[in-house]
Image (cartoon, rainbow, N blue to C red; front, side, top):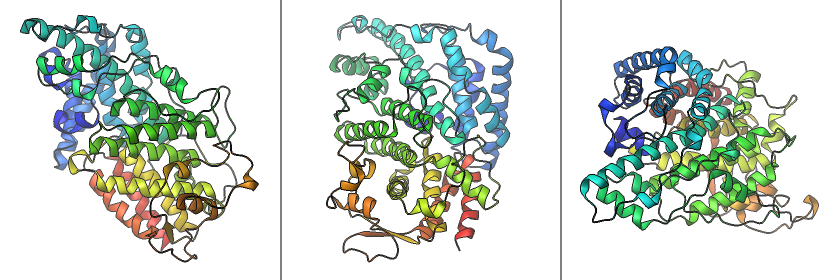
Length: 492
């Protein structure tokens, strides 16, 4: 179940060359614990937690020896320690057990420290000069395939820490554990090469693809050009690579608070322009499967939503204001003192946020059943629910949405595009722009022919059912569903 259900949504281990007897026990325990989440019966959850505790105890007491472990094809020591910790923290971050969630969050930054200690950032990527020819002996092909897969696993696992770091930081409203935009790692190989089941199939994909040794640091630099030019990224990104990029942009969003920037942090306008470039890249990438595209867009909409307001701090504010005990977010982030829910719900930022929230809900409902458990799904859906409940509490029962949303208009304001002052905005444009700028979506306004109306309380009820489905895999959805149930009661 770990390889069939989890790895397709989080491609870090290479099933075709995976050998159980070459793995540490703790790594296997964490992999089985994650796999147990897809079995269904409640007893599986209890057994999974027991396995996780065994693995965590082994990690906590034996990391000094595990950090010296070197697999037969590993480029450096400690790779399995890092993977073990990564899997354990993914399980823990989304667990129903609150003690396990807290433990996972506390241990989370160690992965980056271990990786640096072991020299993983300095490891040379696999050289394409070592690729065997098509006519090479099978033994040579197999040997090089395994060397390549070990390098790829090491790189993807470290990149996965950046993805997890963004999710943990957003959930807790804490700062990221490292500086994402300084990530020196190069882009991983294509998913086609990583998913190959034989050495010959792998070779065919490797010979066909153009080598791209661009680093993520270079990618981020191109997203923030000095002149602010809007342009599409030229790299051929895998879905996994784009998720790493999005978490980097999420970390920049969380670094700024109400436009009070930290030193060296881009403005929210710069971040939104970068997000628009990423959306253009997603739209123009024809090699994604339908499920991959939906999963990437799900995270894209969530990061965009957080450029309008910190959704985690907002949910905590609603719970605090109405004396609702919540255990989803235990960080220290809050919305600014004196925050007015009603005033915000009638702002442009709120209307931008609700467009992204509706898109998030639609994507979750569209995802195929076999892919409806990406690790970022619970937090994305909860962010959308937070926006819906704020609108409902502010007295906005329904919103009249544009027939077709132009996402650049939903994301970027005139000031973001450097088109002049706020008071000289043109009053024409797309339906999306009119919705955002004029508020043509409030329940008191007439519904234009062909537009879409959403009853937000009804949508909250639908979301509550989605969380019940999600909780069978990711236990944190239990606590999210409990909060939403109390929010719904407030809105009646």
